[in-house]
Length: 232
Image (cartoon, rainbow, N blue to C red; front, side, top):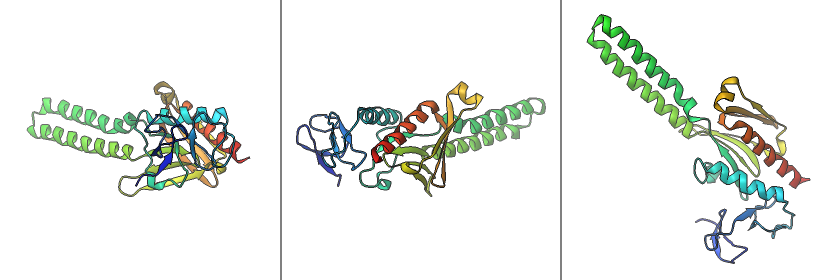
């Protein structure tokens, strides 16, 4: 059964979500204890910690903006600990994953058709169908692999999930993050994608080929800095 909390504005019971289902009040999550409160609150009602305006801006901008493209949340809720909430989520650029099989289909079919006209061998046309089917299967597997790849940051950690049937999770606590490196190639600058490399605590996490890498780099740095301010 979904956890319910008391809305600090109207007092009604509402699911542990970003907005109250009764009055629509935006609910801020305390990064210290995980309690929900009004976005206008100056102090956490549970632990009493002061909430700065920068933290509220990060809560409003980083989370929903990241979710807008893919839905409410990509991270499976069962891997989150109590009080943990996703702040930023993204995936690799889809067209980069689909480009190899599409090129395979175009080049393969093009070569076989070019060979058919001088030779007039019917089997070459069957070969075109085979190349197309193999390319489509390759594209489906690439899409499915993309669909199960998630890069995310919560109020406790940075993580990476991969795998279709056998899931692989790699994470690094925010307190252990030392470096966040951004790599953008010439091709990436033209098409606005790049790779983030997060290292710390003996763990290296790579968010490869993500869209709008500079914006993701900025948001991730804000999340880490916010956590450090809270733990001082």
